[in-house]
Amino acid sequence: MNLDKLLKTAHCTETQDQVLSITPKTQEQVDILKTVSTQYETALWQPVSPHYIKEDTQVHLFVPANSSETVKDLLQRHAITHEVLLANPNELIEMQTRNDSTDPRSSSTFYERYHSLEDIYFWINRTKQDNPDTVKVILIGSSFEKRPLYVLKLSLNNRPNKKAMWIDCGIHAREWISPAFCLWFVQYSLSFYQSNKDIANILDNMDVYVLPVLNPDGYHYTWTTNRMWRKNRSTNMSTKCIGVDLNRNFDANWCTEGASDQPCTEIYCGAFPESEPETLAVADFLRSHKHIVQIYFSIHSYSQMLLFPFSCTLEEAENHSELLEMVQEAAQKIQRHYRNIYKYGSGAKTIYLAPGGSDDWAYNLGIKYSFTFELQDRGSYGFLLPPSHISKACNEALLAVKTIALKVVEKTKALTTPA
Ligand code: ARG
Ligand code: ZN
Image (cartoon, rainbow, N blue to C red; front, side, top):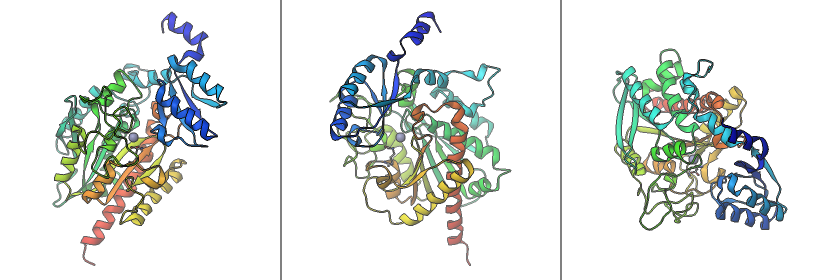
């Protein structure tokens, strides 16, 4: 740390970036907060769009140093109280991006750290080279900025007629725990196939397709420029605002209530369904594999939820009760093993209407076991979950994935084995 920075930290704590937790009590306060989060330079963490700000519900707002005074002034003038959720997010960001693999005192493993996009590309290559018989790398397309979209195919044996499971991570750039989970999952599967009977049972019956970073341009941008970025990085002639929310860009009640046709919002649905190369690549791949893919998982953060379709309508999915049973069992197991609470249910009823999501689209394609997980935490660190929490967050999610996958394997066996 240089002297200048040291003096700043010592004397003017109030001019640092902060994350505030604010609970509006009246409609007037709701309106003020909506204005603050749209008109001032801030980043809304929760809810995802100002539209959802309502009375008596916590708002998590990232406030950069340069708008701190104005924002706090405004809050004070309208008697809106706030708590400081994170007094020093920059310190957390620094901790997450530090490369401590070279530090001999560091006890964390590769999988207990966050990795830059470049490192993840290296990891993909190394994983393939170290496991030439079981891991294949498939190029399914490229991003707006022409970065490759690689899917790892884990195929632990070559039984005939195997089904498959899909997991994507990092559709939203700032949700760093998500790509970390995909890496964790691959490592776990390859290491414990021989010794863990559940993972063996799953992988004997299913191949797994893992897309570690669905939105590489956005992810790269969060490492280099803006840690709070959510969307992809596509540009459009008709606006100066950048990026489409890829989880509003799929063809499932596209751009209806819960998405926005305004390019400058965080939930911009894009010019048309699958307008984005990242969306199109995933959709094309799943369309061409729809007869083998039985389970779809999309990994997000934060808020600790296990969700299933629909998010694009309040209607119930045809196998609603079956899906509910699965996530309930998964949530109970997480609570028993890790003492952590996960909410569960259909997306629209558990959080909000969010059309154009990948899970609903995959479901409508015929993948009847389709899920979106929101990993840790519930707002203490939000998107800035410290590396020391990665292992627990990933193990919880892994337990949920295993629980659901095992159920599907069982159901499939019951259907295909004569009594
Ligand atoms: N929080 C995520 C989002 O806003 C996931 C919402 C649930 N699923 C969905 N298909 N919308 O995109
Ligand atoms: Zn997300």
